[in-house]
Length: 509
Image (cartoon, rainbow, N blue to C red; front, side, top):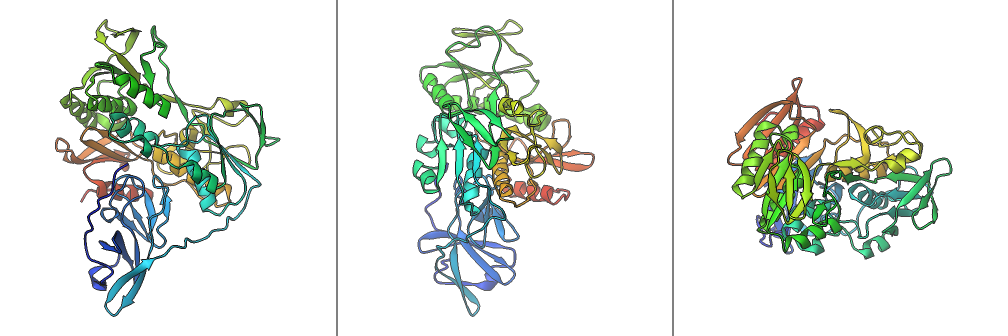
């Protein structure tokens, strides 16, 4: 999370601003009553909302206005300009909404609008149970309440902690630049006030779809009217000699991140096995802690299969410039107390080993319940499974993307948006999941925004200067844009997202 700037910029809307200074379809940063405010115009209407994204503090004025919404330039959160509501992840909290008064050729901001619109769902289940309190599950629970659902909500988490900001576990939190108080998404009071029954340290051991009941790890039985499965994924474990030694770590949970931080305090040399997004972010974070890092990856370049040769090479060069050493085209053969042996016999010294070689969808419970799976839980465009009343979202969901076909994506924002869509559909919205996948990844001073679902095998075109980290990498297949990865071009990334949504061809201006 980032602290928003305390400096107020632009016109003082309390004193008024000329209406013609704000053209139709444009936004203007200003301030009133000591707060930064974003004014936006659509036709003859002028809207005013808080100017700072509630996710990580992004500047909304540098984002993209789409109809009566604004999208954050940093991580593509979406807000309703009419109400200030957070309508798209990763932001979960609203921004303020302000009163506009027109006087002649000027407009003034006269105060806050405290009342939020109330909603009534099209249909209402007797109860909703959500299995999994990660990105998808926690976002779904909140959306149910925002959409006006008043029935019982039970959120079941195998984790010991309240729902938390998982992306930060491999980024700023692990690097030591984000305090732990930023990690929980909400407080205990929030769940109590929202009347969401959050069960931590609890697992579901069996589901009976016919009876609409489930068995819990504490031997209780729980019924449901509607069920959302959001059980996530588990790290792939190394099955080599020494893979279970005490200094070998995986990163999925807050407890995992804490464990790595604790071991890094006394570690001088670390080996990261796997040149994945998680593995490379861990490598960067450990370098921030002054630990010597060597990365073992079986491919010729980091992330080449996802991001292509050009961007994979830039990531490698960026890490190497910060002291990371790579062993590419290699796999680990054995781990000893202070060593990792590679398949070619190379010995790497290691006080700490972190493994990031991928994850597998956690579908065992689902399969036993007779719910259809194939590399994840099969769902339709509304995130419904083949069993009536049961939905799935997040890392386990394999859905029919309108651009890429049936896919499963393991990214935080995708999971949150799926959870929000599933919640609305549980309440009868019949809303298709159509937003293109989005994720971000940080590697020292290289910040990548990626929208769409491409492949390293796609045709790749680079616009800009990769060395200067000011570029967009455009992926195309069969003449159509499949994805865009950008660095230093946040607005361009938002425009690429919109083009993918509208099935338009994306062109860099």
